[in-house]
Amino acid sequence: MVERPCHKRETMMDKIVMHARNKPTVLVLTILLAVTGVQCRRRRPNIVFILTDDQGYNDIGYRGSEFPTPNLDALAEAGVKLENYYVQPICSPSRSQLMSGKYQIHTGLQHDVIGTCEPRGLPLGSPTMPDILQEQGYATHAIGKWHLGFFKEEYTPLRRGFDTFFGILPSGSFHYSYKACAKAEVNGSINVYCGYSLRDMDTPYLSGNGTYSTHLYTQKAVQRIQEAADSDKPMFLYLAYTAPHFPLEAPEEYYRDFTNIANFDRKVFAGMMSTVDEGVKNITDALKSYGLWDNTILIYSSDNGGEPSYGGSNWPLRGTKSTLWEGGLKTVGFVNSPLIRPHRRGKISNELMHISDWFPTISAMAGISLKRSLDLDGVNQWPMIRGGKPGRRTELLHNIDIAAPMQGSPLFNDTFDTRIRAALRVGKYKLLTGNPGNGTWYPRTTPAEGFGKSNRWQAFDSNAKNVWLYNVARDPRETTDLSDAMPGKVREMLDRLAMYNATALAPWNPAADPNCDPDQHGGIWEPWL
Ligand SMILES: *[C@@H]1O[C@H](CO)[C@@H](O)[C@H](O)[C@H]1NC(C)=O
Ligand SMILES: *[C@@H]1O[C@H](CO)[C@@H](O)[C@H](O)[C@H]1NC(C)=O
Ligand SMILES: *[C@@H]1O[C@H](CO)[C@@H](O)[C@H](O)[C@H]1NC(C)=O
Ligand SMILES: *[C@@H]1O[C@H](CO)[C@@H](O)[C@H](O)[C@H]1NC(C)=O
Ligand SMILES: *[C@@H]1O[C@H](CO)[C@@H](O)[C@H](O)[C@H]1NC(C)=O
Ligand SMILES: *[C@@H]1O[C@H](CO)[C@@H](O)[C@H](O)[C@H]1NC(C)=O
Image (tube, rainbow, N blue to C red):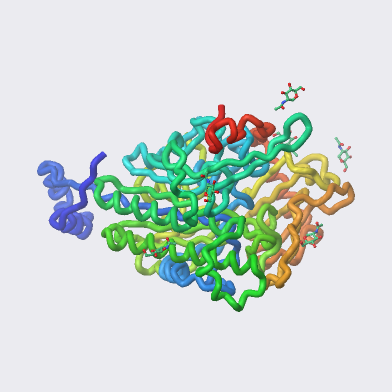
């Protein structure tokens, strides 16, 4: 579909129509517009979605990080900061919900990240967000990390709604060499497979070797912006940086001045965030210089909480990446756009919002009305972001993971089994069950010697506690467990979990397949089945 912008004359007509509402002239004008064929379609907005990897709640200047992020701060501060915004605690789950608009229990991805050698991915069969945008005439581009499966070609970005792809398919890679390694068990022993991961469309992009990931991905994004300026189509650009995820690597000039940071990992992490901050500036500058900014919506989000043992910080929240505590789930998110109503700009939103909401929200930004049969778990938050309307979400299923190790004994025998790892938010209350992972409160400043790796799973203990209830609106640090004081609320939320559990698909977790081995494919990570 080719679009042309509304000309001034037509925009005047629109205004007359608007002001003349309820008057008979409206009809006359409308007929006139229809007959003369001057009706135009207001050009649909470009949407730029920037996702960072493992940026924690406190890893941004405006929350008080020890390093500055001036460009991100300025964008957030002039836009809408999402301060009650949730993602999933690990990579593929967050990405799966972003792309599908569905909770993990509804895609079978409720357990763990997609291991690089695992023959699984975001299930085929329902359209992804970019599928919808592409079908409606958007040019759709993915840059950076995919991590939604690639064992078969059908699962790769070019078959999931993207016109172009430039980036890596597996869970991560080194930031200069694009080397990625993965494990698979073969006949009882663990083998490690390594290969080169950077691709342009369907072919390895070897000449990227040696260029830092944030620079390379930013450069490609700027190129896409330039192409969009020459095109009739609106653009959806998905830029999934691999910074600041480990391995901790950054060009030295981005971190050497952070003499205030004693811990070296934290310092390099700060440098990685500085490359992102500069990259986002380059992108907004490009949008402005190519004349696209006035009709662009820029969304910024992290994919999960920070990992303190790799330089991240979720202070003052509890827990880390991969746990169901707030530090795993609550992170950075904001939207900036000239299309946000002026009275909303520079505002903080305390409305509950979740990463699964982007599918319907971005569709609404693009003016697309979605079919009910898509059965999304996300809700449209564009009226909230753009116009300050109440948010449409009061409840949020963080996850139910029946494949995770259980903990303790069941509290009741006629509702949700509290041994199962799960978390649910209803209004201001959050219930956690099973084994939510290590709930340490890490200090604000990383000690010089760093932290040990926090345990994702605590050891099974049949006597261990397995139910917690918090009023996270009042107690965002999860310090005061209300489960004994409010048994009625616990019971009510367990019933709700049982209701969700009844709608769950079985977890899809096939064993890693040694045929993933890049040595069988010229040293390259690519589909192997
Ligand atoms: C695993 O063991 C079986 C039986 O010994 C053998 O046939 C097979 O080749 C082995 N697989 C690999 C990947 O080494
Ligand atoms: C990338 O560059 C490094 C350093 O020059 C080299 O050792 C490595 O083999 C290169 N990787 C590939 C896949 O060419
Ligand atoms: C941003 O653009 C400047 C000027 O072109 C360039 O030197 C810098 O490397 C770019 N930064 C990133 C992160 O791409
Ligand atoms: C469930 O627990 C109640 C009391 O807590 C007990 O009377 C009942 O027999 C139990 N039902 C089953 C099926 O175990
Ligand atoms: C949850 O659902 C699974 C099937 O997905 C079922 O096996 C299990 O019994 C259910 N558990 C509870 C506590 O409802
Ligand atoms: C949780 O993590 C902290 C910090 O790394 C560690 O000291 C503690 O032993 C861990 N707790 C459990 C139960 O694993």
